[in-house]
Length: 143
Image (cartoon, rainbow, N blue to C red; front, side, top):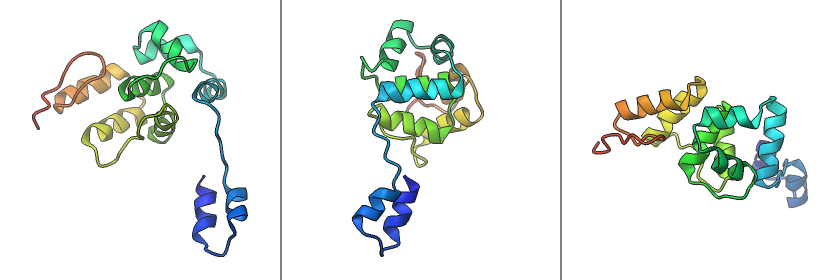
């Protein structure tokens, strides 16, 4: 996609040239997940266990049968051990907003993802900074 934006900014390209320079990937979420798991050599059962999601729910998410909350998608990112760029792509493909560098909670999540911490370790940091956690504990959200 970056190539398409760069081609567009040049100003001397036609719309067709910009479209040709853009790597458009319109795979459905389930197909994208399946391809990413294969590309990374990940097994679904391992991803589900690391995500700490309910097993049935996680498989339904990956099959495209459920539309999870943003937090559940983030847990899936932890299960897949994605960095913030890949996690943002998963979130957007799953219908949620990408990780935002101006949101305190998202910065903590990105920090944890980039260091390949487990979701429980991220929860500990979120809790310590008074932010909502993923697995049940609530931080002191009065900032």
